[in-house]
Length: 188
View 1 (cartoon, one colour):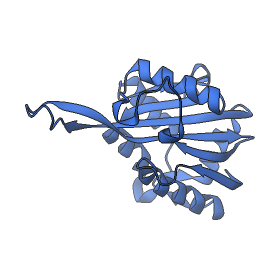
View 2 (cartoon, one colour):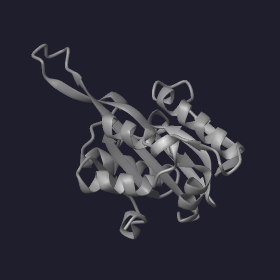
View 3 (cartoon, helix red, strand yellow):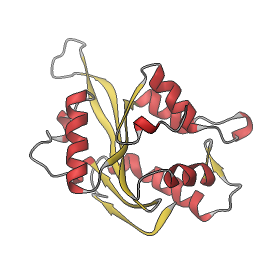
View 4 (cartoon, helix red, strand yellow):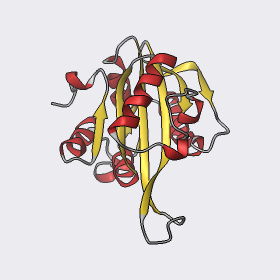
């Protein structure tokens, strides 16, 4: 699941705060036996997903949250990026984690100006492909959907099919899945 040494870029960046607990959970799952689970996830499910990926690729996650636009002062809302990271996967193992802050490219707007629209999604994917590897899967969503997917579990903490749950969210328009592997949708 995780390479013996995982490179973390921009661990002091603001977006890293949302990624750190996920890496901690992945490390715990990776180091425990196959019966261990975390919020409906288990080692076998993650390993099977990683095995289906190209030899060298990336996974990209962008999560936005609506917040009151205090500058406007009229009750308007704007969407702020709250989680943005890229996992570099080589031979079915995560080798590096990069926050969006680590993506240094003139084509990208500043982090605080990234929007959840198609234009910025494509720019992010182009930059990641240029700097790391092609994007196998990119998930763009809102914080409520992200949290629901991430923490969903079966009765009594049982493992659930996270792929099917994410696909159901995509079918209902709650998230957008993009990347080179979406044509080979793993979840039906």
